[in-house]
Length: 358
Image 1 (cartoon, rainbow, N blue to C red):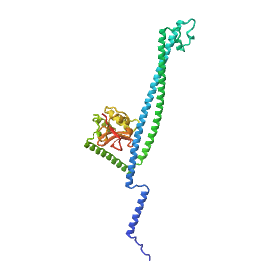
Image 2 (cartoon, rainbow, N blue to C red):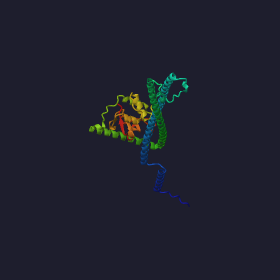
Image 3 (cartoon, rainbow, N blue to C red):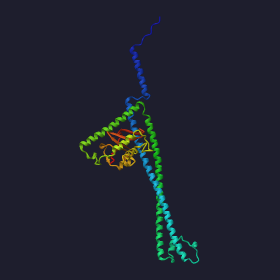
Image 4 (cartoon, rainbow, N blue to C red):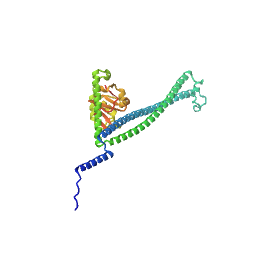
């Protein structure tokens, strides 16, 4: 007689299931599934990289613009020098022709059986010394020779300027090529970073970005409150209120939200950072420089805790990396390479200062 199979105790089954669950969880962790705390850390690291490449790409784009402007100026100088060379050569020919004409005329009157074609007019200084010249004619020709000397000196200077301008243009062209390569590399690096931001990690990165924006806004709000309470004049420079057209500039930027990020074209219908700010203010009837560094250098500075709508906020040394239009409430509109668009967002990262369009 066969005995009935023995049932495993319930407690043993629970333990077995628990062991299986634990081993599966461990295997999942080992295969790369990160616990929440690791996702937060990874999100923070990714956001650091996104902000860094944002600034790098924006800064490279600004450097490229400046190099292109210098190259274009050098090429224009070279063309102007070439035109001056042509004018100087014409002047040399004109004056030399007058000298030779005077010599021919005088010697026609003094020739005795000798043809003009047999005369050597190349040694004009020697000819001026000959006795056949009247004093008046000699003085006139001396003036012409002085003019000839000046024209030849001008020609030499123009040729030197043209050579320098051509060399400068060649140097800038090389720098432009290098800047474009660096820009393309930075964009590829940024895309590789953005490709990692998927699924749950995308939500974690978005939360980290929002946390940083809120933190930046709170910091500026706290500094503003402290400065107002202390009456610190240093924090509120006496540069006057924003330009009355600030609302128009902000409205232009709002209408551009969603437009693509691009360095060419850069002032509509696609934009880079300084292309957006200069276009916004141009639409309001105010002309400002068209690169971020020039905007920061050319406009009166204000403290970050004294921001008013329409002010420009800058990142990087001398404002050379990035610029955004402040619209109030801790919010900015800027052309962002990581967003690949003109975006409305909170103040982010570590801006170095602000400036006001008066």
